[in-house]
Length: 163
Image 1 (cartoon, rainbow, N blue to C red):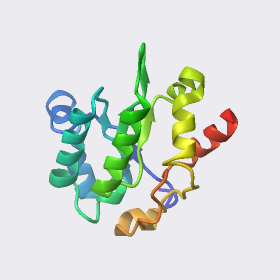
Image 2 (cartoon, rainbow, N blue to C red; image 1 turned 180 degrees about the vertical axis):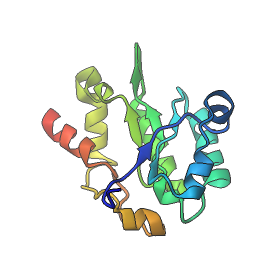
Image 3 (cartoon, rainbow, N blue to C red; image 1 turned 45 degrees about the vertical axis):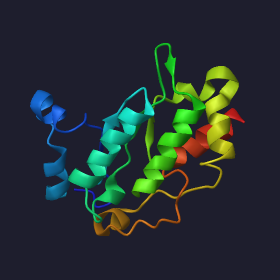
Image 4 (cartoon, rainbow, N blue to C red; image 1 turned 90 degrees about the vertical axis):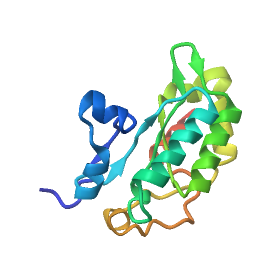
């Protein structure tokens, strides 16, 4: 086993995921077999997204496990592309809940409409560089709230490529 290996998973939303696919993400967290969890909160409206995020934070995560949560936001799929307003609203809501990062499905949404979403992130919520949490941060629940921009350096590198 590599002690520097970080295990991340992107399950569907519990408990639907448990019923349909036997994905038991609460058990994985409790047993400590996952370092990061990225539930696919792929909703096309903010109210639905917020309801699921609330449920995750209030029913499945504790102060110790919350730093391991970086939910998935649906950015682009087929003809759908998230609005800049909804994108900002979802990220700001994550921060209000104590969630310090998110992932996006999928990156090509950053380039839609003359890079609109990339510009929104780069000039706003992701304007400052962020560091990826260490395994120690994740295991102790000591991820600092000073990282209020992106937890993901990959987004930062992608934005630099676009601009």
